[in-house]
Length: 466
Image 1 (tube, rainbow, N blue to C red):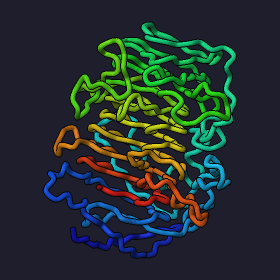
Image 2 (image 1 turned 45 degrees about the vertical axis):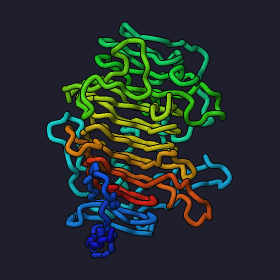
Image 3 (image 1 turned 180 degrees about the vertical axis):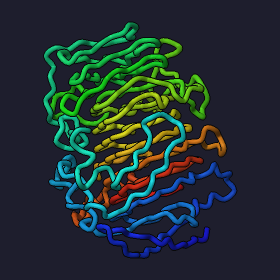
Image 4 (image 1 turned 120 degrees about the vertical axis):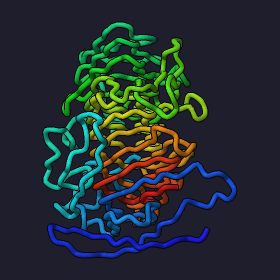
């Protein structure tokens, strides 16, 4: 197929002053598939985005777009340092600079109004005065715990010691309202189901372990439809889900993860069996329905570590899975590190989430699918440059359905993202990144996502609708 070239005029706003800069961004249609019937690529868009130090600035978007895109290879023109997310020891794949954050220089990019979902709950997009996940003046730090000074915001905990002096083993089914307290630790043995009508309360500061085993024997916590979570930590007393492997031996894929099932819509229909779950009850692991407001409860200040197993080929567990979860659910401050599959995956649903941090995910950091419609804001994604999944990994993978026009269509809004990829991380080192990492945003299979006021740093491809 003949390549088509368009030029987007881009405006750069620096410290209150405005000057014009021009870059030619190569915009290509999806690859020619010959006589094969196309299932439809995404028609997503990126607005108010800085593409920084990417291998290519190829963006598959509407060529008539007049939205602002800035392309630069000068990190220090936008951030107070250029050391964040880079290897500190080339011989140690886990030695990454995580304490320094990509704090932007004040007002160097003027944010635009983000998209907002219409009428989908109270936790919608804020009008921030900055681009990316972090502000220059700290206005979104402090009380929210969105910083490296809190116990919650720990991106690498391989050597962290957790208490194991009062362990309670948890198996099978939780059938009555239950409270887990911080003076004990809880070990998930096999797939544990919170059943319909039951509330599981978890005190701030509680540590929950997932047992390492094979397939469905690995520790997993599943909230069936009709169950409720009441589990809100604090910046200094987060709720931690981790492996029971000793410090120094932890790595991704040690246990299953946490799964939420609800009645919000999915374009797969109703009563869908969620990936990776195999319960004894007919209702176990089913999701999908007709209630976009479905309320699974509240979860906040969670750290979920070393998860992600394949129960069978193509049947995998993520760190956190939301299947059909609605906008009355209150979810915020979720940190995932060392995910063996996706960090967070949405199968349909309408949940809105603020404050997500992900480090060292193997597959996709955020995976939105099956008609998901929600608002996601303030997201920090840091790759390990040496690790990616065989299927091909992206920081954000957004898909809807291989059948064009299937409803509801995935239509997500994402704002204030800072993603840090391997092209930036390994520059001037002579080291090679894992080639299976594909890029920042991949929107495909008839999906629509609008990403606003964000930094895409060091991706092989910044964003594309393949």
